[in-house]
Image 1 (cartoon, one colour):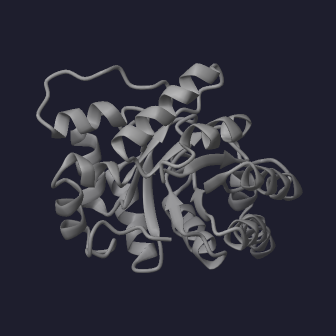
Image 2 (cartoon, one colour):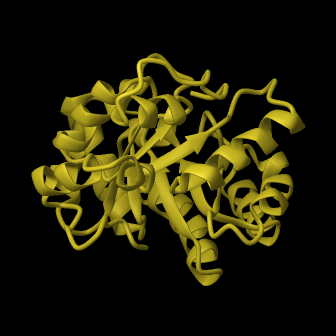
Length: 256
């Protein structure tokens, strides 16, 4: 994992934010350019990848079916393919998550954003917490074995304050490279308060990804200043254009 921009460490939030916002190139390096809507077409996925390569985004994030298409489109660019696993509910079998992970890694994925089992976490016993850890660990072991990274989606809008703390700790204990706020498909997205909480738990141990509802430079700036080191957005091109001082930009790809 390399969640830094330049030489600034990710847990030094003010310095990291300042450097990430210093230029469109620096900001692009922390943006996961995203297209996850079910109606996304092949041509839209290819367009997403072309935008990711042109702007040097952190990755192009797609649904599992499109990983091989994205990998082919991004071949030779140095921009990795990101993919979601157990998405968007997190309620699939652990064996299914592992199988899905193995297949998308084989097809060329590098960033694996998995949804933890929200219902089991909220069931609240020590045994349940261990099951959640094992669920995450199974994906982490496969990804790390292939040189890939894992971002664990907590779906913070469905969790209490205590559950957010618990979920963050479990994900980190399981070896997550990032903890992430949201799928963008539930009742809410990233908030500044949740990012600050998650950064407080993660400290120097992992990155924090803000996703869901980030549509403007102001949104991205707020998340970075709160402690995010990666941002998932479908409006990535527009956000970069705002930073560059443009008053208009191409329409965002359809994602979250």
